[in-house]
Length: 298
Image (cartoon, rainbow, N blue to C red; front, side):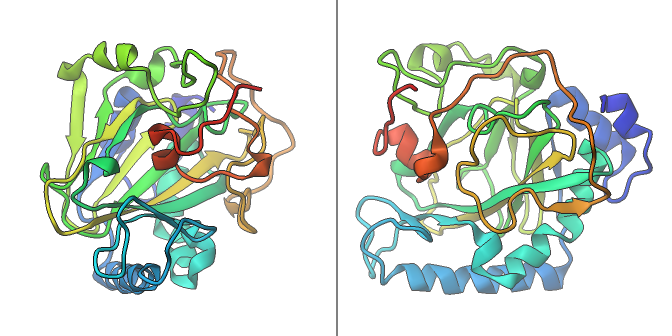
């Protein structure tokens, strides 16, 4: 569907102005959207997983941990696939946030994946400039990620930053010169980013960010000793079909969470870079950008 076609459907959660801002800028932020009880449940479940991570010494199927992680000083960079880790996370993925997705991709919505990223007062928690769609190319670009801040997020603890209008510009090469996947812009490309067009999406706990899969974005490192969790859910329009293996599939991948199944895929003529073959597994963007799991080109 085109933006005009999507906007012709009545809004479920967002205002019409917020929907228009998303299509104009490639992202939108909404302050304190979550009901208090939903937020409190997500915060409690997340605290439990942080405690569980203290017993882990290396990254695995559930936890991605950073350098220096220990029971005394945990460095949990990511809780992988929270949609299968707790029923509370999956209820959230299929509840209010799925309605937000329908406001922006159209009435037929498919769940793609979820993740829970943390900031730990460590420069290794920087997420460098990148675009998402090269990780999981689809037949069209009605693919987005909705982030929910589980704690207050300011310029001190690494908010999401996005480049206005970049979703309508060319995609970047996210391989290095040797053909290794890095999942980020080269230093040269990053230096050319027009910082006058960057918005930092700060917000209180319960606020959300939404960005299109083509939108150029990053997240600076935190300057706060208090960890900042960001729960992320990715969705697509049902007529956006994947070209490549899912980077981290769960039993919920590609489930229809709103609307009806479709019988036709819609194809956007703009090209998309193909990532490595993820069928053998995927760790996290932190590992890719730091070179921990560099993979050669196919």
